[in-house]
Length: 129
Image 1 (tube, one colour):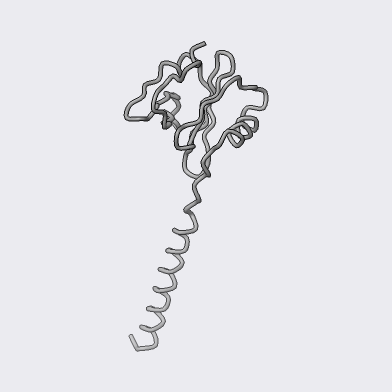
Image 2 (cartoon, helix red, strand yellow):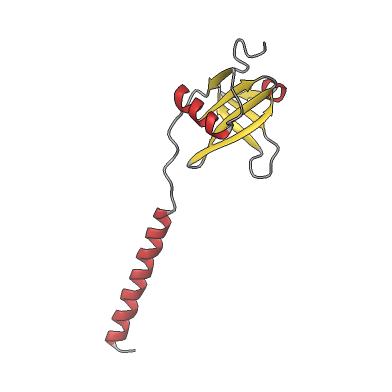
């Protein structure tokens, strides 16, 4: 190989490496912003338009919420760069365990087997009524 071919090969390899690095960075999304009560209610209304939650409890870190509507629990949990929205029985939400400040809700789905939310204690006062 002559010098021109080696230079062309090196420049091509560098260009491919730069494009690969740029593609890797471009696929990384920004994390979803933490929820406050207004944002949680807005997102719940989008995800569950026919539901009207009676009460809601925000996770300590703002990365999720549990809302109660009758005998159903509406759950939002931060997953990647968005929020996962699921519905489960209120009794299942009440019986979930808290360990080390984390509440684990069993969702029993292949794509989302559980939601883990930051709650120091669960259930909060008034949640059982």
